[in-house]
Image (cartoon, rainbow, N blue to C red):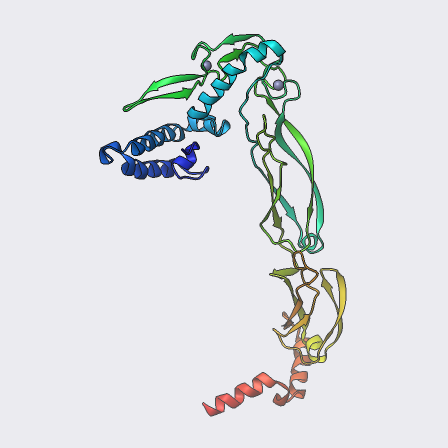
Length: 357
Ligand SMILES: [Zn+2]
Ligand SMILES: [Zn+2]
């Protein structure tokens, strides 16, 4: 029989209260003893459902359960038996075996902001995080090794308490002693009995060239540390790429919008343009129009985990001068009179179409 409460209710570990309620309602309907007369199996399932629901729907109980994940009634009973059989051995060898439930470390999230140029080259980033680690003074037990022990007054040492339900009685882990049956009178001073302490740790991470904005990188085991064999949490680094004042990223391509003066565009020539790797020289063809593009292959963003790169695209914008003086207007008019319409391809075409209209 399934022992995990989440699996019993067929919900994920991150399920909301509503999802838990909904899942329980559906399953309880299906397995309700009234509907399944004479089927002992359905009744067992129904009891399990109630037990799982009881714990998961209550945020406080659920929190505790999550901490002691996988530690339920049946398992506990077996463990008690084992402890009983080990009783004499315990006295003979003087080896104190304390059974503790594994507690998982929590996952952590850290946001890093990098520039587009850093994303293009790849970069190593150092930062500091705070995480819970095993208390070195008490080794996660929460009390000094020689702390005074009393029998738990709630469960009288059994580690579990019986609770009456509508159809049955269940054993629940004693909340006071967390199932240990005993209570330690002294607390570890360093961690105040929590078994873990919050510490700062320096983390260094290599961000690969070509990383995409919003990527989450997982550093396995760098989150909160687990105790008593519980798995360490992971650290997730979310990489945010700052907007660049000049370059726009289009997947693996880089776009640069470059303004040209009328004469630069009309006459053409060699110009210097900024790129991700510093200035590069490029030829502007004579008669360049607004919106014309030059594509330089393999000078864009590197592709992740590949030696290939996207393209560097330069898009020209021909800019018309503004706020002209009388003299400038005069010169432009003179120039205008010098150039016949045959030298303006778009205007010529427009005129032709207008006539046909
Ligand atoms: Zn401690
Ligand atoms: Zn107790």
